[in-house]
Length: 497
Image 1 (tube, one colour):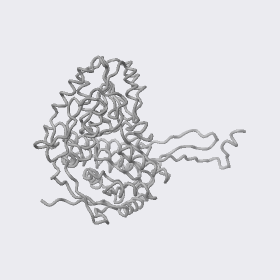
Image 2 (cartoon, rainbow, N blue to C red; image 1 turned 180 degrees about the vertical axis):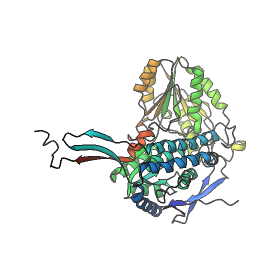
Image 3 (cartoon, rainbow, N blue to C red; image 1 turned 60 degrees about the vertical axis):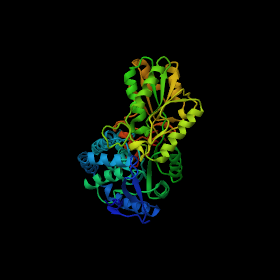
Image 4 (cartoon, rainbow, N blue to C red; image 1 turned 135 degrees about the horizontal axis):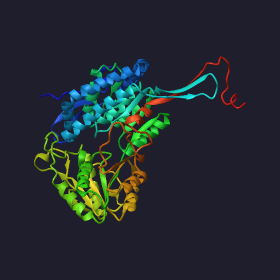
């Protein structure tokens, strides 16, 4: 059967790139399976997409927000109808198991319904004026054309975090899907188109970061940028956006800690550690990559975690019995291998895993063994740098205070977790952990769409995705004063008399 070719969406039309070139989308579990051919676009395609978005904004911003929201609601319903097919497409192109890709699509459904509700809110404020016969209020205004750069690990959920709040606020969009996983973003956008989204309101340009991503950031008609990816690339995006005076939302890396205190429910903590470390093959910015365990239970906890990690069934995520799928590509396998080598050189012990898997049915994919590293101390590179693979480090602590100190001793600050039965220590952890997210008796993964998502330090630049945080980014405030006194009134000057 011939491989299907997919196109860019520009101005309501699915069209090929002006380069005439395509790239293959490869199944990481079976590299002989080509999901499709996608457009290898360039700055000329970006310019066409941005121009289409700028033209569409002239009318889209005037559509009443509740009417914009109705399109989002219909898109959510279509995503629900297509959930299984879209999940299977995602497992083929990204690798994570079907249970997780179904959850990824569900997150887009939830975001669509949540943001549809915001169409009848988008609240501003009214406030008393300091002068007589004068009315004062603030209203939210759309920003304009928004450029979006999405990652490969949540190829429908994260684009939905970006597109849907931007749309309900009255913006138009140009999105660059991740080079590795463009199909899931196209599926999301197809649902929006089928729900009645007008031409040009959302435009999709596939291709590399250098050929598509940076031209999108630099384009003079793009008013705001939303980026999710590595801290290294995010720094460049942020610097470029700042040079062009553009608001820029950055959601970047994490080195997330889960604290397990001596009074924890150990079985529950083990369940959480296994899911937090090896869900999505560890390829989450919120993945549990450090487990800080009280020294009195560390030996038992670590041994049991290693045994459970070793027992995980690894394979093609389309097999319902598989518990962990492949890494996204050969480069990520090399990164995981490299960090395990560094850990050994630093004096840590690999209790299980630490190597690629290429036997039997795994021979044609990018698989890495679930890895548990013991004997780790806070200063080691394996405890400081993001691996983005199924590699988790176990560190010992003497008490609660040392656990908090270790958890905070990293350049990132995205997600944290603590397992304890002591409510006092739980609330101290909520206060003292330097992170945008804290879980109590749950792992570091599992964000809900109606709460803000993001972090501190090198994880982000202060903006948030999800919930009202996204509405804040995709709108700008306008203060409005209506003077019905029929005379000149000078604020501060006349009130001071």
